[in-house]
Length: 45
Image 1 (tube, rainbow, N blue to C red):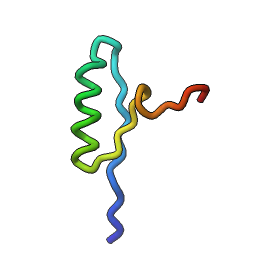
Image 2: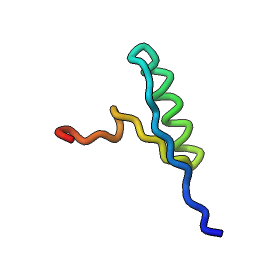
Image 3: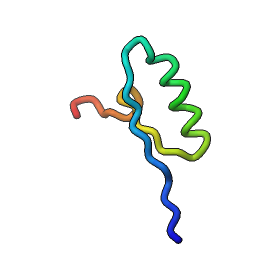
């Protein structure tokens, strides 16, 4: 069986940004591919 990494889109309210950044780092350490605008959005995209 082909095992693909889990991909996660993180959607949040501005007030939750610190906790979501922490969650983003935790997910990355565990091998998940999270997507967070502040980390993965290239300027001008």
